[in-house]
Length: 317
Image (cartoon, rainbow, N blue to C red; front, side, top):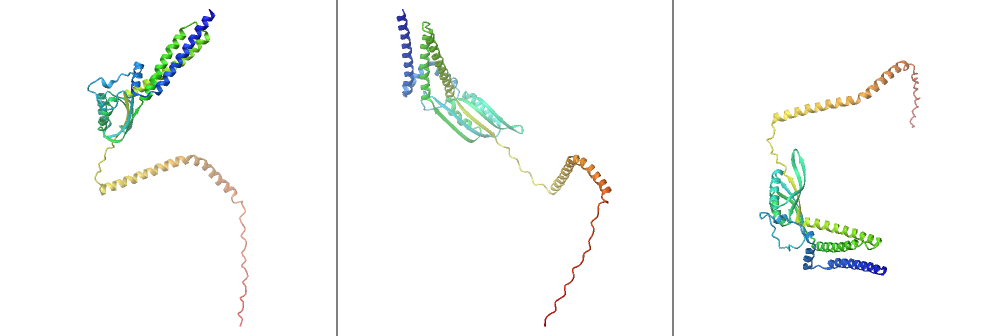
C-alpha cells in the first residue's frame, strides 16, 4: 500500500510539473508569434475578457469615422486642442450637443473665473474611437485654434501577448485547483500548491486589470480641450477738454493732500509711544541743568601774545 501511495503521489506531482512546464511554454510561444491569424485566435480564446461594449455603434445618428485601418488592431487615440472663443457658455452648449451626438461625455472639468465670468477652462472628453476623427473638425469650429495635437498608439502586440498570458494562467489555475482538491497528498504538498495558486491568481488579476484598462482606452478615446475666452475690446472715448483736465487736476491735488494728511496721522500715532517715553526725560534733563549747569567751571580764556616782528634786512649796495 505504501508503494502504491508513493507511486500515486509521484504521478500527481509529475503531472503538475508537466502542466506547469506546458503553461509556461505556451506563454513563451505566444511571445514569439506575431502574425495576424495567431492574434485573432488568441483574442477569441480569452472570450469575454477582451470584449467591451462599444456605445458608439449602437445609434445610427452618431458620428462615424471612415478609417482604412484594420478593425482588429488595438489603437489608443489621444489628443489635445486649445481654442479661443468669444464666450464660454455658448461654446460649452455647442460642445455638449456635439458630444451627445457622438456618444461621448465630459470626464472632468477645471474652470477659472475672472470678474465673475469664466476666463478659461480645461475639459477632458471621452469620445468613442469610431467618432474621434469625425468630431475633431467640428470641435475646431467652436473657436480659434491656438494649438492642436493628436496621438495614436498601437498596442496590438502587447494586447495579444497579455491575452495569451492570461489564458495560460487560467489553465494553470484550473490544474492547481484539481491538485488542491486531492486531500490524499501530504500537508507540505498542499501548502506548496496553495502558494503557487495564490501567485497564479495574483497574475490573473493583474492581467485582467490591464486588459480592462486597455479595452476602455481603445473603445473610448481621450481628448483634452482647453478653452480660453477672448478679452472684450474697450472702445476709446473722446479726448477730455480743458475744463475736465482742470477738474481732474484739482481732484488729484485734493486726493494727494488727503493722502498726506493720512500719512501724518498714521506717523503721529506710530510715534506716540516714543513721545510718551521722551517727554519725562526732557523735563528731568531741563531741571537738572537748571540746578547743576551754573556750577560747572567755565573755560578760562588765555591772553594771546602776538609774535615779535622780525627786522627787515637792509639791501646791499
